[in-house]
Amino acid sequence: MPVNQKIEDILDYIQKCSPGQDEFYQATQEVLQSLIPLLEQDNRYLEHNILESIVVPERSIIFRVNWVDDAGKRRTNVGYRVQFSSAIGPYKGGLRFHPTVNLGIIKFLGFEQIFKNALTGLQIGGAKGGSNFDPKGKSDNEVMRFCQAFMSELYKHIGNKRDVPAGDIGVGAREIGYLFGQYKKLTGEFEGVLTGKGLNWGGSRARKEATGYGSVYFAENFLKVYEKDLQGRRCTVSGSGNVAIYTIEKLYAAGAVPISCSDSKGTIYHEKGIDLASLKAIKEIHHKSLEEYASLHPDAVYTGVSHYPENGHAVWHIPCDVAFPSATQNELTLVDAQKLVENGCILVNEGANMPTTPDALDYLRNNNVLFSPGKAANSGGVATSQLEMSQNASMSNWSFEEVDIKLRTIMQNVFKTVYDTSIEFDCEGDLVKGANIAGFRKVADSMIDQGSV
Ligand code: NDP
Ligand code: 2IT
Image (cartoon, rainbow, N blue to C red; front, side):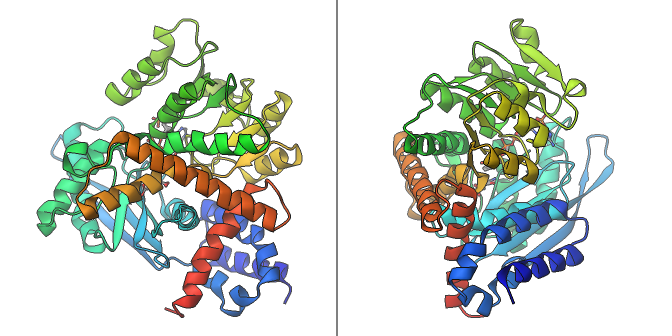
């Protein structure tokens, strides 16, 4: 059977078996279709039915989370942990707490994580988890009780050699702390079962900064191939959470001018450059909306979501040289891509997971805009999580500089791996193909080596 037909059959099967899981289908479609050149060259993957196997999680755990709110009332959420692949190491990947979380979202994130983790060159398998719990508007005590209830089920399935969760949207240092405390209470073990921990109790320096810094390092590596750099470049960044803030911080260090940020309510365009100290205070300390930023900076332009372009996002309509989508999936659509091209953008570098829609990606490609896929460009976060695991295992504590140097080297190697793979498959600079093929090959070869388990 021709490879194309085989892939279409598997995608049909995924659609039938996972109805309504649109994001998961989108992620599998992109990966499987970009593997065609590899599958045509090496028939072992089809012979061993690796594709049919790799799209099914090794285990999906779905559980009820009952907790008590400040009014003393029972509340119920759904918890998930999808342990997708342990072919190259213990399951590893973040937890997302957001009202939009469902099984399809967690499966798409877990599937992407398999290949991302393989690209880091480290021994970590792929997983993702989370809940439809919304930490926004909840008191610290409510968040604590939710995290304790969530961990009361999850602890049975994780461990420092088994599955090591971390943060993602809605899960930061506060949530990791409460989750860790409950794990310790239930198991009696003080172990590196989560990453993103506080520095006093096993966390790694530079983990907080790692995804954003790594994303900028990746962009620098990519631009260098074309004898370009970030110096003086006007950069748009979406989001204003962990990834966005440390992308902005590192962009300043690289001599660029980050001119935007956004949240779920609106977008800030600050032509002279985002005031990082004020952004950190608003988001990291006071947890307020970006309207607050606009009121502190009268020269910044604030666009509320109700004024966004039809089917688009205000942040991508700001003229820029480089765009760093760093908020959430499918936040950069076709109309946004058209605007970026019209405004002369040279690179879209994904800090978030799958922020670009498939039609937007096609448009960027057809218009020769460089494109860094999230599974490569944002892999600095999980890579530094693995550095945290290494420090925990050896009971050591590395300096910020030591971790940052390792992160830079890892991002350089991730870039080299995906870029070299794009050359090997005659699509120089197509890092989507490069990342999917390189990540898949490592995991698939390991699956073949280990037999049909
Ligand atoms: P945070 O929770 O710290 O920040 C998320 C940001 O995105 C917030 O500004 C939030 O706005 C905005 N946002 C979230 N969901 C939506 C939505 N549905 N519509 C509009 N805006 C939204 O998360 P992170 O910064 O950690 O994560 C951002 C992205 O990066 C995600 O795709 C995540 O999977 C990915 N990622 C994160 C890594 C990490 O180490 N943290 C590692 C690799 C990838 P608001 O506050 O108003 O909700
Ligand atoms: O998407 C991601 O890579 C993360 N949310 C980080 C995962 C981790 O284990 O550090």
